[in-house]
Image 1 (tube, helix red, strand yellow):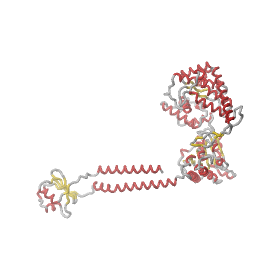
Image 2: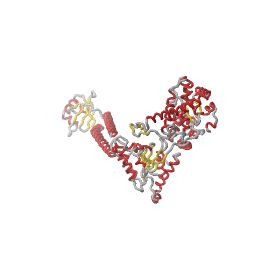
Image 3: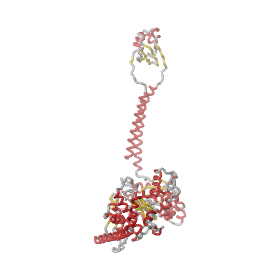
Image 4: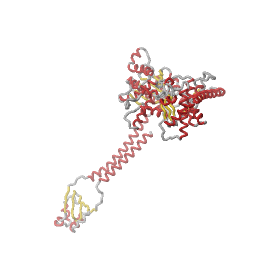
Length: 617
């Protein structure tokens, strides 16, 4: 309603401005409104006798008199008589009248008369247009009031959106997820063979996975393969301030989808409305819970042979209401993981379409350097590379731009204006060299691909590691190696400068959090054993969890702290042992880093004399 009011005010001012403009134009082009003096016929006769009149113009009954001094006057003649006869009656002789230039003109409608008519009619027209506009806006506002509870779903894959249609070939990786969804596609294409066997196709399919892994893209590809309309709506679009609007929009969405013979409804961020009921403020009358109840009812109301399928997507399956996940609703759950190295390479090949790529580029190397990247991250990486190449006035994207874009996506833009002092530069060099040295020589450590003391984002320097192989399962020794690597910078500073700086604060935070997870979440404490401590509190306020519910005593809490400290000390001992044994390599690597500011993998391995067997190639 606020938007409608703004549009109404805007239209009103536009109409007023147009009216004023046209009035100004008519005023500009209308004939001069100079008032001429009126004289009688008798006075005109006397002035002709006196020789004051130079010209008389007669137009119908109107007389325009021009005097010898070029002044003008106007008069009216008698209707029944000619002007000469009227003047003769007032004593004007033919000789006197002959000295005056007498012009007779036919009367015709001039611009003055038309302008007068228009100046009278146009205001009426504009005021009529103004009132019509008010009435139209009021009518639209009333219609919007009634449409307020209608769903705001976007339709893809329909006849009006052929260019937005995609299929499984446009989605790289996710092989297992595609196989699961092919059953949905086959049902929508040939439902009869399933129904004849008494089989029921899943009413709902829930896509689970981290942000950016392709949930929305895969849902659209399913609709594209099935060649059916695709109704896309976000979970948050159902919720409004007014009670009952969300449930009304759910009903509207399902009614619209049922009008089509076959359709897919996609609800993105399902957790926005699917959160477990009874834990929010407002109880059972909360608007979000009313909306969720309506979704549950609509999914239960599907007929056996219904060809409308619901696809939901979320990265928080742990907080969904159990009623959503029971059979008959979201029967099937499809897990989408982050892409492997082969999948990342395939994703890069898809997103590189339409971008000029140099022949010497190696997408495989970029895939190797981006473990943990989602499909959205890889798309952003290529976009940043294209922007970087354009800024450098290049015609093609080269390997240099691709490599630099990885660091920009991971750490942020390079801060060239952030110049370190000589001492800060030295501290940063020893800090990053400490990370690299511990990572290279600790058991289960990962090879270092790049070290830099050029500031990026919030980091004064950075060390990028590249895993020998991607791991989905990690052992305690792997975590200890990671913690030791994180502490390498801290102890390298302490060894060289006999004190530590604030540069290690983020490393210490990550190491402490990781050590605490080993004890509380992963059951890797020898003293406490395979027990998980603490329960997450799902009650939220302003998007933040209040914290953790402790299900253990103060005595156990003290033991947890002791075990965390023990793990940190164990990793610290490992890091200091390596730094002490390889002190000469620490000095060489730090000096080289201060000299060049950035070292790549080959230079690092040459200084540290690491064999190919160690780096896993």
